[in-house]
Length: 471
Image (cartoon, one colour):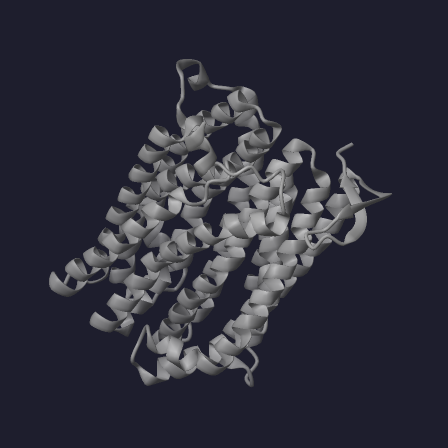
């Protein structure tokens, strides 16, 4: 019991803000380290191989993400169902959720990995990848496709642990694997001179270590992972719930990836300088995404546990606190990008034209950070409530935006290449607005009931009680 208390966090009681922050901080550190996989690849390749090699890695990003997303959505669905079962206090159902999610995550990523490896060439050609970087792009993407099963292994273990409120354990193994990735990058790329394929190999090895060690530790130390023979039974009902929620999440992530591929095609049409600048800004914005993504995941777990326990007032409180935290971070990052964009891009490349273009691009997109954060906050709450429809809606909005906005804006002579980054901001605004609308619609759908009884907020002040009850 003592071990369980040290790793499992029950979020159905206590101060919502402090719980969300306590859960988020280790996960944020872990997400940043996870992004360092790509950052280290980009920095080492960009500095030691060249901007064309950096562009080659960037050209694979959206296509690779699409295949990863198909697998990760299922894992996320399993995590949400597990959090709801944990909130109900049903220990046996939690274990059933873990084992049945594992069955899905063993088969699905293997199939997706094979398909991705075979389609790598046609996809890169469809994206209009320039001939001079196509061989490197193909080698890197196929290497990353081999690693899909390892990425899914870690995502399975971490999503189950986070559903139980444990955001610390995944962090420890990510830190180790990130250090390993850096060392291997230097060995393969700089010492052995293997180019972009060496960066891919280093990342795959590191992901394998991260996944297998995290899962092994969870089995040994977390009581919910101590599976008995009766827990191994296939449960059609639980599996159906996981798939029902996981497939829309997978489609959402995949549609977003497809929309990114459409944007990448527009970027590719402007040549290697724009591609290198876009890759550098994308890598930086992946870091900016992390606090938002972490907050969204924390809210998903918080909402799932409390919704499962019937603590619906806390669901509403979590949403409000999440929006406040998101707004504060967005305002903090705006001046950083406005005044230090050139220094940030210089981390990735030394080419003056790329630095100049990338710095201006960061200034453009930073105006829209609040819209980006809104997507993650609302998505986290709705995912925790089990709203499968929103996932699909959000993906459709991004696809429409990224297929239309870049083409229209870059076609205007006075905007030109800058339409790439203005369109990113416009898409964030569209997706954020649709998320807020869906949130209000969903509350109306399941029923919102206000009472005259006051509740205490985090600061101890009285506020109107809002109860969300499923009909």
